[in-house]
Length: 134
Length: 141
Image (cartoon, rainbow over all chains, first blue to last red; front, top):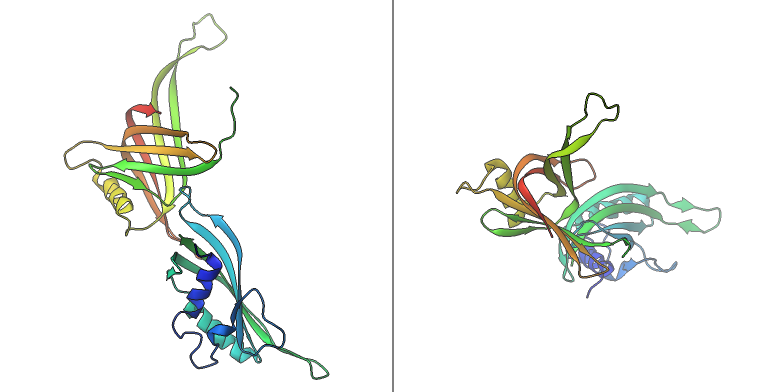
């Protein structure tokens, strides 16, 4: 049986919402949990932060997810954030039916340029509540 | 045998409007039973006394709003109709199933739906809640 983590990745990579221009993020750069520090940008990480029953009959689950768009510039990170919001669409993924998705928060951590050649990329963080069932 | 805490595995409403239906997607459910009292205090007594009078019960439910679900749509229609086309009353059963055993408990009675609320709020799903006045005897199983 597929996990909700697998279903969320399938939802994010469905179609070409993320991989198309502008600021394309190929499917292989959509990863669960973390990305390697030296990996190519832009990229997206996601996590499923919690799972709980959302109905007495036990057939509807509720999960909190966090999806982070990472890019060299804030502008690109914000572009990815908009595409992430579009990619969060109800449907059936890996046999898991995602009924409803509610984006609860979006925030931006701007890029940081240090005194040497160090640079931290910008991150646009989207958190959402999803209702789903097997 | 002493009372033990029974973890909830599932709670469902079974609803009959001429067709037996099972309503899923419940968020909470409850049954409230009240018994009126009749005072029988004698004038010479300082301590009031009572005997049981008439009793009545209601069932309440709160669920996700989904008109695409046949059972839910039938429930919504039943609230509006008040009774079946034939004049027969609706029947409603609330059924508790426990994860620690195969035990199933239920209350069943004829009913009239007396309230229906659909609500929505930012960052939330659309929900519906209802109250049903139970009519006649309530079967406890």
